[in-house]
Image (cartoon, rainbow over all chains, first blue to last red):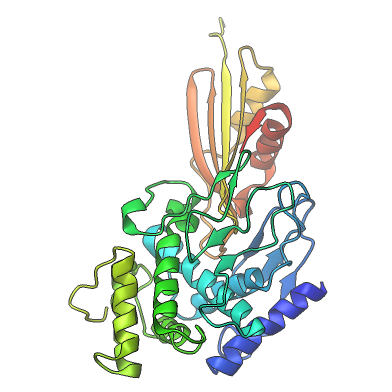
Length: 260
Length: 99
């Protein structure tokens, strides 16, 4: 319970202090969550109004409140709901997932005051029990390398478009293909350097508020991030160049560099 | 009524969730009890409501073949109630599992 409370606070702080956003809806919505959901429940989710956390089964997963990035991830689903409104399917759904990983990771980095170079860029570190061969659920730095376990299999995330997974499960692989925009953000943040929440995070946050279509795909989102970087830091700025290089690094072409 | 030989096979795939790690359960019965057949037929195949609000909840893909009839549905976690829940619980309890 205290962990969940601390995670809520850390998430609220990042949005309020860095992005001047008052809670997930921008209007001070009380942050609400339920813990110990059902028995042995291997999940944490956002139900459209609040976060819900399970305790894990104790075999593969421990409790889902263990890491603040998980809490930041779930609350960011709320932020996305109130801003970009991305649907939860295919590329738009993978963007929705990635945005939650990005700001979940930034909540963790901000609370530890880590630079982009110091951060682990892992999502859900500490969630696996000791018997699982893996460091975390996902790696933004090296998607596909977070775990490799005889029972669970290998982390299926692609880092680039060449590995994009077509599937009907998981709403079109939203938790798999999110590896691509996750890695793009990592490349942008490390390309710019310093604290990731200050510039890369700001560009992504500006993009969330840019009025995108709910069905925006990777290329459309990439173009919006470039437009946001150009608007805030200028044409030909190091930040805009880093954004261009980041998307190029994961195989997403930005057509014409125009917005929407 | 001369019943055709009733075979039953059910596959349940749970995907999504925050972890994104899928799990699969399956059961096969060469000569299933009537209550298995009744349970499959009690599920509202083709009438599953969508869940457009939730994020990171599980999705359950359920495929059943019983008495040569095929059924298939993708059921959001929020809608996994009543006979759906009972069916999934039973496959998880009596069937085989692989991650």
